Image (cartoon, rainbow, N blue to C red):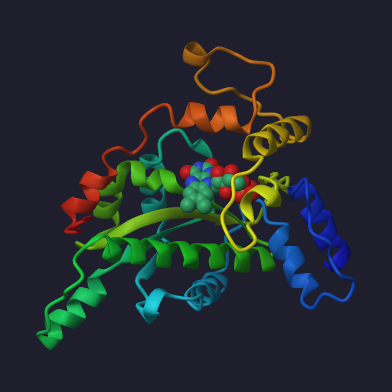
Length: 277
Ligand SMILES: Cc1cc2nc3c(=O)[nH]c(=O)nc-3n(C[C@H](O)[C@H](O)[C@H](O)COP(=O)(O)O)c2cc1C
């Protein structure tokens, strides 16, 4: 992989890709990152244990808010536990066929234990405690996915583990203040996955200050461009919204979030001890 692969990936991803200088340092690594695609179909080959160990160590080398290190990875090495986790992820049959599953957790418990052990009150029992741990888990997940790709592995995060957060916590023996952020399916890809288009950089990268000028037109253009390259195979909730020939990303996201999703998650988070004020 090199600068031309990087150019190709960015051109497939964005309607307005940046210029890639010929002498860009690290172009091979950037090409790997820019070529990211989630993988949901795997060869049956197992992922070697030693590879998983290295991947976890690499992922946990990623930045951490205030060096709090508020995240953990539970690797489900036991097939029985993997099957139980897959059974909790409703509507995503492919998860059961993933050779390996892990759950990335936010962890604010360790910080609270330090306070307990040193007899110093924890004075930050508010939203930040949850938010910091969730961000730390997300950063580690992103690093794991990128590292796995460098090893020829494919991954797909699974936020659906939060649909059954309490049951997943029970399965993994998570104590209070430790919560599942996302699952991750890991394995050797059965086939190359397509690059999925992102919103134009003109809409998501801002110079000096946030702007929304032309956002509606930019999204309409994105919908059309994405429809031409990767039309959605299935339209959501046709019974309620009807079928439309120009179904696009924005229709899909509106239909998705027109139905309540995980509206019990806040209750679960409070039930494991977080105050979210
Ligand atoms: C935190 C997180 C949770 C996700 N959860 C799911 C999931 O439950 N099921 C799924 O099929 N994909 C899931 N994904 C993958 C996204 O759908 C995917 O990243 C997005 O469609 C963009 O596609 P790409 O990753 O191939 O570029 C998740 C991604 C993230 C970052």
